[in-house]
Image (cartoon, rainbow, N blue to C red):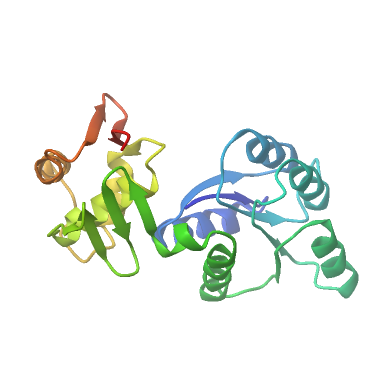
Length: 225
């Protein structure tokens, strides 16, 4: 899931970016209101975390502008302002959830995933189709034309990245970071190319193609059915 974090506290932002990435999110950080508004209006995000106390343009104003342009974008307000009036104002402006500081990260992550399940049930559950490939994350099952693919843990993690980022390039850095959480050895040398080659062999004849984008990474494409 592609997430925007709008937070002006650099220490908190760095910690949250690291935790969210470990939880499987792709995170972009905005340090102030104008940058947050620009990114949210110009780039596709699955979710936004928005601090109300942003400099240069407060988070409530950003929320109102973004909500007018993207009425279905899930937005979680994260703020030190815990008064009733602030909560009501945030929710009335279009926030889907409201979390006050200080907070525990496990609760934040749980609320994010609950919000995604409500707003994007198929994507959150990992029930995706790419061409002739069916991919079910929660069931940990992938198949082509109904035939199950036998995947090692690293092949599964790689396929997960390619499928969930199917409209964007997956970098080697993203792959190495994801593999760092799978309990295996750190990625190194040409291991990425080895696993890409293995997936390509399993995709033969399926119309699925993993393109190498030189200098950037890999992109999953599928022929139209």
